[in-house]
Length: 304
Ligand SMILES: [Zn+2]
Image 1: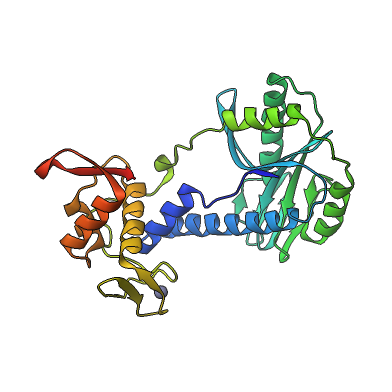
Image 2: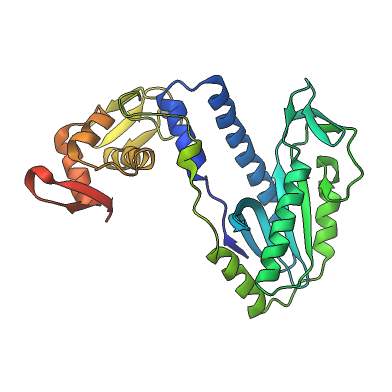
């Protein structure tokens, strides 16, 4: 049973918007593409895990903290007698390890994901102890991209290569788990209870309202080339149709994610959407968002 489903993270959502609305530096662009790849890999991993037959509680994308250190868990499974922790990587192409250091084939050093796994494993074990659980913990680093190769790979059973995935699934599927109790659910609740809010704005590239491309983009292909009708917006590139109201709400949610502390007013949304009449903006805001203030001081908060 999936207790915490995987969703597009706010960081990836924000980077998608920034990529569409401003010129990213080469480094930021690479970071954005890595996030896309990471997410794609996690979805592939989730699809594989759907085939598991045994009963287990699944928590995805946990951000935990122990000893003032934050650490991310891609996937955590609570089975009857064991808990599993998975770090998922979607590396593509050739890599090598030398003196315990991890390199791309062209020689660029990257963080050794095995070190990352060990670090999270240690902190996770301490957290489980703190909660009063002595259930065995198994940690795995899973490479899910079939075109990944690691030269000079260590013989470490906690690393699962793409060619071993099938056997690995059979193996963990054989671990009996049919009797989950309230103690198991309690552990899941405790972990969800200490799940941290990511302070991601610090990591984002700098941006401002002025420096960003205004307008609406297609929900399907991201194009800004839209034709606006009375009720419907049509993408001139892919032909996708979307109700004006829905498209405006989507644009407002993008704005709110980018500028969480700024006041949402009719004029701000009008300038942001760029191609929608003030009258329509006023109607969409009034119909869908909670209103604060009066006459000229009106601004909007969250969705109704
Ligand atoms: Zn489109």
